[in-house]
Image 1 (cartoon, rainbow, N blue to C red):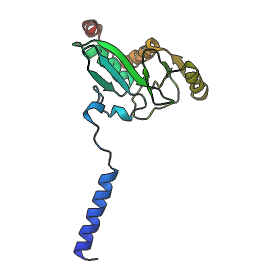
Image 2 (cartoon, rainbow, N blue to C red; image 1 turned 180 degrees about the horizontal axis):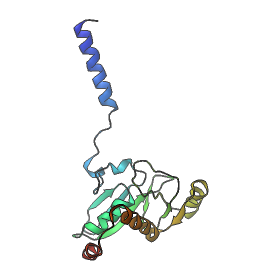
Image 3 (cartoon, rainbow, N blue to C red; image 1 turned 30 degrees about the vertical axis):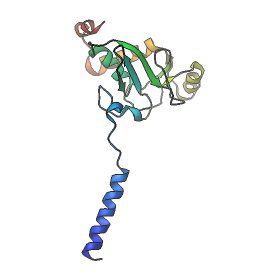
Image 4 (cartoon, rainbow, N blue to C red; image 1 turned 60 degrees about the horizontal axis):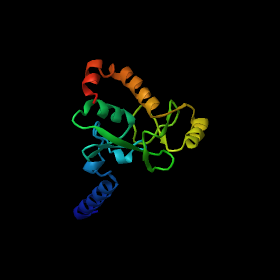
Length: 163
């Protein structure tokens, strides 16, 4: 093969590799806390603020951190992905499966897949173990997890972040 053939082959291989590389996430798709592409997470959350803006989070741990560190806005509502259907559902009325063997794609620990229907959550519970918890229970799981990995949010900081 001559020099031009080698250059052409190298150019073709570079184009093929670039086509397979994941594109950078759109600015609106980035988790506000960790920078992951939240749209690729099976536990994606969309936090709607009272000022009409919204932010995305890749997991409930990042939502928990946002709740404690964003002080200039109040959370109006939160949506999350239904683990079984992928549809956005109301996160505060969802059922969560904690402590199971399910590891959602694109998520970070603690893994808490959400379900819009309690019976669907029970189906996953029978197959993967764990426990079913509501919104408050899921936040409790995250709070305990956060305390284990970082010592948690100090009571002083927590008090200063409460609305």
